[in-house]
Length: 158
Image (cartoon, rainbow, N blue to C red; front, side, top):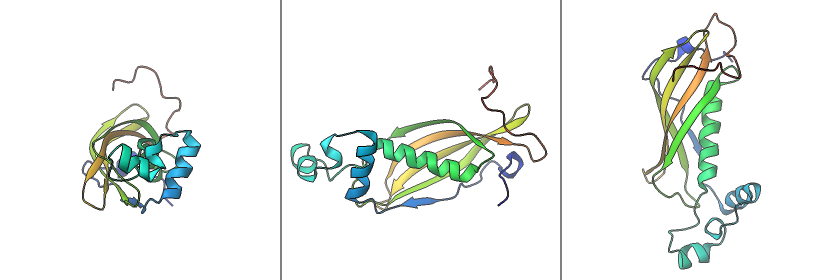
């Protein structure tokens, strides 16, 4: 596998699509346990649909955040760094949904020693609803350059 470099990431590049699911009850229970998030809307269907009037057990926002990070890390590979990720939840995903990560590079910036690509990213579901959107900045090495420094240098203008 060839390492991803800044030169290989033009503006407009579509990121690889990643799908997960359908997300089942055990997935939610395991995630809730690992995060110690015991809100009943993630594991108690009668409570979620009856008491809270939700359409089903909700997929945790932190799980969607984790999946977004995982998809980005898979794309940039071992030589790149996920520098920054900002995201916003716009809707609910529920148990038995299939989540789909997509994105595209919208901006590039050459810095001293490495480059940064900005991608608009999102997670949607099989109903065609976009429920999470975000912006990611990834640091990538130049093809003939050194590794991306980490921690990043102070004072980078971005």
